[in-house]
Length: 71
Image (cartoon, rainbow, N blue to C red; front, side, top):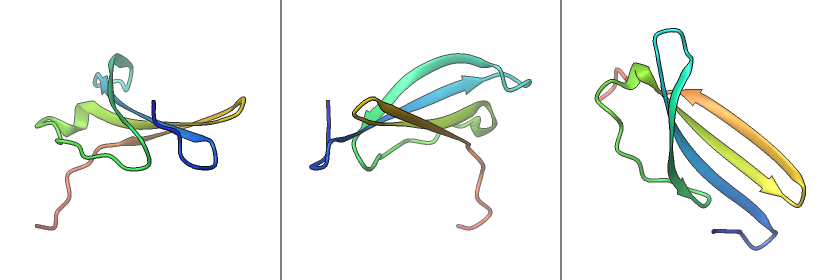
């Protein structure tokens, strides 16, 4: 388990969602302050979440995966 020098822990998750944005499954994608990720082919059915833990405080942020128009 990765914890940075000030005691903050980052945990990354890939969430598989359905057409109604309901979570179908959760996969651990990694831990640490950065993440290398292979983007799934059907991006519209995935969200990326990061859980940040410091002492007894927990925050979670989730973002939808979207295809970029730039190359």
